[in-house]
Structures are given as C-alpha cells and as structure tokens.
Length: 120
Image (cartoon, rainbow, N blue to C red; front, side, top):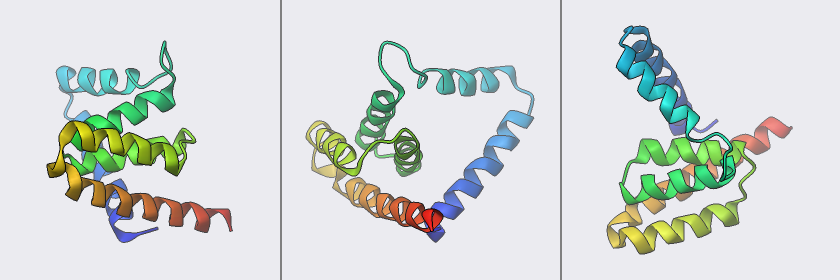
C-alpha cells in the first residue's frame, strides 16, 4: 500500500474513533447522516460516490477526494468513469482545482497499485 494511502486510512480510522467516542450525540448524528446519504436510493451508490468526488474536488478537500476515490473503487467505479467525473469537477470548479486533480490521479494510481498487490 502506498504510504499516503496507508497513513490516510490509519489516521481517518483513529480520529473517527476519537470523535465518535466523545459521546456527543450531534457528532454521532452527523456521521450517521453522512453514511446514510450514500446508500442506494433513487440514485445508486456508485453515482452518489461520484457526486461526492466531484463536490470534494470543487471544494478542494484532498481528504474527501481520497475518501471518495476509495469508496468509488469499492463500488466498482472504473478509472474512465472517475476521469469523466473529475472533468466535470474541473469545469465546475475551474483551474483552481487542477492541483486537486493531480492529487486525485496520484491517489487513484496508489489505489490501483494496492488493488493489484491484493490480487496476487
């Protein structure tokens, strides 16, 4: 696993445990809502994760970009579909999103490399 990808997963898990372990009902409710909106409904989960990826790119949040890339891959989203979604993010967000597109492509590469290693 790429170092950036590994660190992200470890940090996210550790900090989410601390946040949810604080016992604050509002924090727990928000996290539960965040999970529930990505479940299949009128839109399938794949589409919702791609929407999350576009929004995260436009908002320029690399942590969110990586999270949605991971979730897209778990949902079976192909690289070409991710690339098309990122092209929409670029049109909506403008050239200021280009550094985040670079990050998305780098992390997608790491995710793909990890996936290949896990298949062996």
